[in-house]
Image (tube, rainbow, N blue to C red; front, side):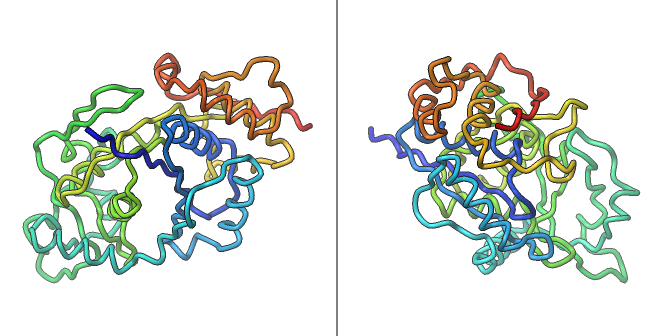
Length: 305
């Protein structure tokens, strides 16, 4: 039996420069794909034009190249596939798995109940729009049957989507297609077989798997790696004003990220170019080592060179 060629991906949003948290996901996904002899694709998730900037997309590409993270094929852009998202939503509407919602964000925040991954939609419009309401958004009709999938770090996961998030958004009130729909469509179009990303996105996986199965799309293999945090325990992110990585520190940062991922390069690689460090990591990559690491750990910035 011929094994499907591995295709991994990195899909940053161009809302700012790459930071250490971004580099953990980029390096982990790159090394994982290359260790399996596979491709590593780059997708720019620029669907939200109010937050994304072409200059940041250029910056992201330049930074990845400076770190020796060379992708296969052309860079993909979400904003070129709006028509495909619309077609997919139409399929779900025809199957009665999507329905219009007239609720405002404030109403959902007021009426929704807390769940493991945030507020659970109260189902106000599940049986039809209330009198006098017009459709603002579209939601996926979640089922009570649990969704099961395997994560290569966290093991078997069984999640009831209706108890996790409820009927989640497919198209937002501002007219943009929501992240779960866009991501599922994009990954299927690219032929992605393996998704490697931060453990903070593990709760988002079950809704995506539910969508994949409803649309008859293959479910990729998942690996959710530890999330880098600062000394205060906050996730390194643009929201928390994480410091942009400096390409001049590419060697030190690459070594630090690999150590964070439980693959510390040996002493003879001190000061080695990032490409050599990545080659070493590809040869020695063992994702099982990540199972001994907590979901989040403090990640101190390397000292400037």
